[in-house]
Amino acid sequence: MLLKNIEELKNQIKQWKKDGLTVGLVPTMGALHDGHLSLIKKSVATCDKTVVSDFVNPTQFCPGEDLDKYPRTLDADVKLCEENGVDIVFAPSPEEMYGTDTRRSNDFLTYVVPPFFYTNKLCGKTRVGHFDGVCTVVLKLFNIVQPDYAFFGQKDAQQLVVIKKMVKDLNVPVEVVPCPIIREDSGLALSSRNKYLSDEGKENALVLSKILKNIKTLYKKGITDIDALKETAFSFLTAAHELEYLEFVDKTDLEDKKSADDETLVLIALRTDGVRLIDNCILGEE
Ligand code: PAF
Image (cartoon, rainbow, N blue to C red; front, side, top):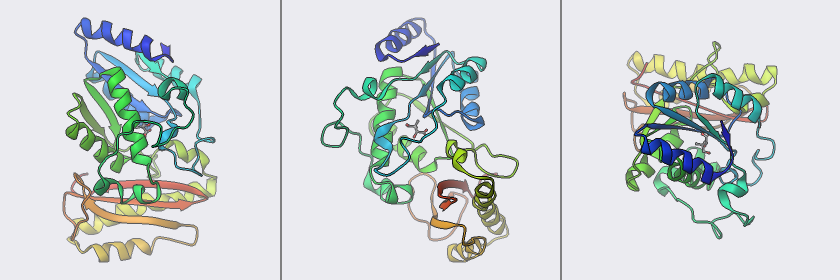
């Protein structure tokens, strides 16, 4: 069932809660792919009822980013959800979520601002304010849906850490369930933004997963020196790649690592073919 109205959704949730049913939430910005599908399947398997939110959240886009051209495929999304046992697709308009005050900015809206320590690095360095928008919309969704479980992809690793921190700090009664990255056979991590890539761009984009795979292989062979691991990674890059960052941080609090260990989260962001792509891995995991 497709719902666009907050009150209608809240009434349905109230009924489910009254009936003692567990509720899973899969927050998305739509343009659903197999990565989202893996979260949906996990929610449907874990919870009595599953809500998928499908909302391109304007407050998490920075000026000059791809808000207007972000892929919107609601009809196909609803079909995919229905075929996979989702109970409600919640697709509100920006006005339904934020009201009719079009001055959506820190000056006119109550925002959730995650700690600077978690957001002044990695993606937050170039996407200033992005995680304020993410946390604000995610907390709003938590308050509307009141899920027992919420499913997030490990692909957006910094987002996952920031959301877990918000949930802990603000005592939000939800269990955040991280779900593994889904990749094409080529190694490319699935992302709605892959739609922007040309064939050549797609080929160039393989460098992200190749670099991460190589770092993991070297780490397994005993190399823990981060400068040495970075140096070999740089040798994979060509003129077609504009590296934004390659960082080694702790997987729970994003603190910079001095040397690599099993708890190390390696994150990479680069531009190729005019498209900004991210990927990551945890060295201690398969
Ligand atoms: O990961 C995403 O798609 C978005 O950041 C999220 C969590 C749905 C919030 O808009």
